[in-house]
View 1 (tube, chains in turn yellow, orange):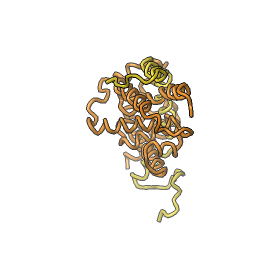
View 2 (spheres, chains in turn brown, orange):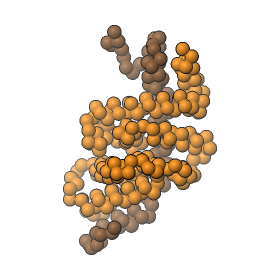
View 3 (cartoon, chains in turn red, orange):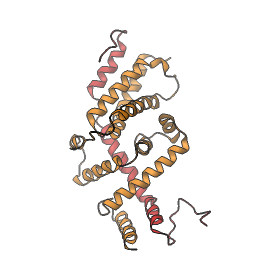
View 4 (cartoon, helix red, strand yellow):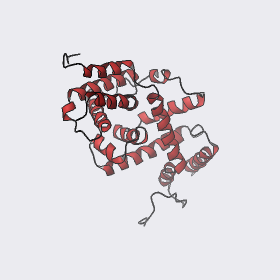
Length: 71
Length: 187
């Protein structure tokens, strides 16, 4: 049984509760929604650009090797 | 060999994405920025171990991830942005609604096992391929694929079950989720 059940398609056959849940999670629009939320969340931070402290750190690499000991 | 200026350019360009990744790992901006700083310093100190021609961005992510993991092991999850200091730091989203939605989403992400969370974020947020993500996480491509799938399923479960009404701004999504959930609960 269930040998060639396509895992991607929503099978609207009657299934036990746990199966139903899994089908919900694979709904394409929910998957798309998760992707969108991820990108929004990520994009918010990316939009902040590069804080100065990092520009400073990377600037230092142009200077001839001097003090590496910062901490 | 690339000149220091090129390297610096690539590193600078990677910073915003590194920060986003670090914040989603640690849930805290300050900790995330420290993590990024440490990763950059470590990368600079080990530039000679970077192989020119390979993906520097993936290399930087690998370093950052390893730092996070060793730190994580040390102090588990003691403070995870309890008071939402991270959320407060963001003001750019126009709608209150999306703000709430994203905050819920972020909370849901925290409930995922770390391996699933990082895989999902690297693929869905940072935009790395499965192959690159596998390289960053030091595991097989198939493992990444299954982690991402499990992460999505789990997220959908958390978000729809805990908040079926708010998940998704469009009616369709809501309708689907609601009807399926009530079916699940009724039977």
